[in-house]
Amino acid sequence: MLAKRIIPCLDVDHGRVKKGVNFVHLTDVGDPVAIAAAYEKQGADELVFLDITATNEKRPAIVDTIEKVAAQVFMPLTVGGGIHTVADMQRLLKAGADKVAVNSQAVRDPSLISKGAEKFGAQCIVLAIDSKWDSAKQRYTVYVNGGRQATDLDVIEWAKQGVAAGAGELMVTSMDKDGTKSGFDIPLYQKLTAAVNVPIIASGGCGKLTDFNDVFKQTNVDAVLAASVFHFGELTIPDVKAALKKDGVTVR
Amino acid sequence: MIAIIDYDTGNTRNVKKAMDYLNIQNTLSADPAVIANADGLILPGVGAFGKAVEALKQRQLIPVIKQAAKAGTPILGICLGMQLLFDRSFEFGETPGLGLIPGEVVAIPDDLGVKVPHMGWDQNQVTQTDSIANGFDQEATYFVHSYYVKTQPQYILAESDYGVKIPSIVRNQNVIGMQFHPEKSGRIGLNGLAEFKEVVTNGNYSRN
Image (tube, rainbow over all chains, first blue to last red; front, side):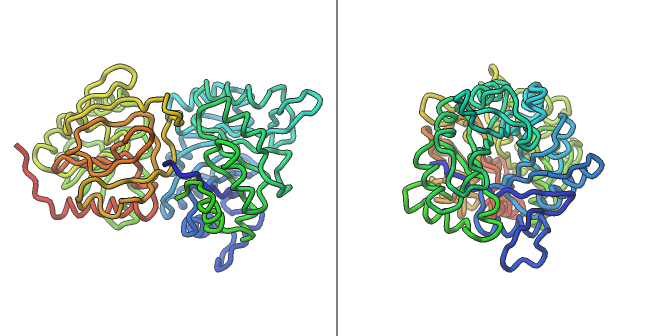
């Protein structure tokens, strides 16, 4: 049976991992290669690199970073952040990325999804969505620009539209849950998995072991993305996998 | 020298990176002369079957690969590259493949309650003992595909259960295929590539 995936997310700012990854036994805590290798050793199933470099001039650094990581670490690598064109995708895929994640630019121009899928295959194109519950409208609203700006889009509708355009996977972050460590947004993922038939990565809210069990037991998501709980060693991937296995969830 | 066939489909560079990491001599090439003289060939591939066949044709590589296979050169097809080794595919209409292993490529049924594409780490069950399948039994490898191969059990070394039994490692003498990505499957995947190198080094195959 297909294993549920555990995916650490690394924020990269011109070539260095930011937001303080604090591994034990790591001499250079900002080096993407060392961090990626440490996660590979722990049994991570995949890695997501988010390019948070603010200026366009410094963007090429992410290509160099992926080039270096892909030469040492042999698992699927996804890169997101600042992807505006098919040429941006191509550079990252050539450097060693297996998938690219598009977000704000896909909202502005959905043809970016279809153009990417046509050229590289749907399996290469991940649609990242930032979601926030709107209690007035009783729906989840899509946010762009790093969650700073609301759009008119309904998350479920946008997910369907993105899949129809060729997105092979969805990476959906609950802004309501992100940073709270109060568990994943179960209702959001129940609705999403009922609406589309592509793999879904849940993100935002995990703080303890049972959060992982809950999201996999109560929804049909395929993977979870987590950053700080792993970076600071609050939880380790082997701990998470052992707890899932005990609960009957298939893991690698 | 192992030649990784470079025909502008998929991330062939990641296969090269894995071979480099293993210190296995290799070259990325679309040159028919280089490919014809290689001791072993790797045919990678991500994308659509028809487009890949078209890309191989444009580079005049189909007769070269067929000739090498006939001469006994070990060939490893990866993912779409494995599917190309078979007789034909039904992805976007019928397209003939290289015909090096009997069988055909069909869609993973989407009415089995599984998601398509088959994407992620899935377990292998080894069905026949063979050096190339060493160490893969009950181990998960990374798959990304929407089509799978239908072939006779004699060519199947390992399979993965995804509602249907998906052949994950196949072999017809010197022609080998892996449906998963060994270059993305951690230590176990790298072992598979190293075993292929052993086949290239030790093999003595002649066909027909």
